[in-house]
Image (cartoon, rainbow, N blue to C red; front, side, top):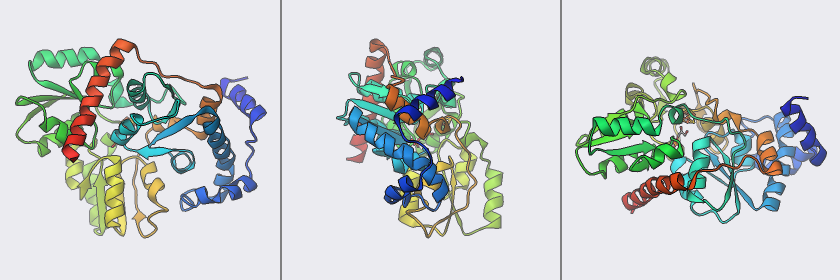
Length: 350
Ligand code: 13P
Ligand code: SF4
């Protein structure tokens, strides 16, 4: 028997997980939040998992923190908190429950663990990584410090705990410009996203920003030429791009912001046609709340985010696997970088 078959057999012994229109009917208030993108027949498959997970969550004293790139069944069905990377990090500092299930990628679970060393932080799939986090190591940070002596190191939260520990401060896509502007000195090292760094350089022209050559495999695939073609074809489309996209792509957009910034922009402006230059689930998660907006794509899928499924979340809570661990001395240093970011963000917002 394969590992997946064994896991399914074990889950089937404990929970009634067969597709069920009765379960779909019992959870129709949840389905109503995604009916435009999740047909009833699909919801009948998801609903038994949603019911089982929500019950188990209470029994285990668990909360689910879910990133905006989760699929609608997770985002609307089981998440207690949804948000961008900064919001999830801030929410992680407020959790009262003993267990956090991170519906997102590994660096997000590490951040939750760094901020909550005494709690259990579960990752439904330890393979859910990130091309940015994989692109840099503490040795890379040391190389950059040697090349640019005295320059502060601002690392994106999309990094391992060890890289955070080697950095002066973290940033996310929603606060990168503020954090960089708050650094002492003329030169600031940004790692590991070269495109976020180049986009921030335009917003903070009084700093010399030097960067690591990492990139997000989802956002680097969009091209400015594609967006220009699309705009020529449908001029009434509002284009919104994530700052992990190359700068020429961001230059074609009407707005650029973090995943939550994108959601807020669409909610506020309600364009007739919106093209979200980011991960596919973003449009799906807000489509029902904004029926007047036509989401015209295209989008790219993050293969790491999509490793998180209802089945894996149920297994994670059932078996209490897999707990994320961060070595104490690494966590202590990484916590300084993350907490400094949160404090600077709060100061800028005040
Ligand atoms: P934000 O949600 O912070 O914008 O980050 C996007 C991302 O790629 C997370 O992996
Ligand atoms: Fe990493 Fe890009 Fe996926 Fe976000 S979307 S987890 S940055 S690979």
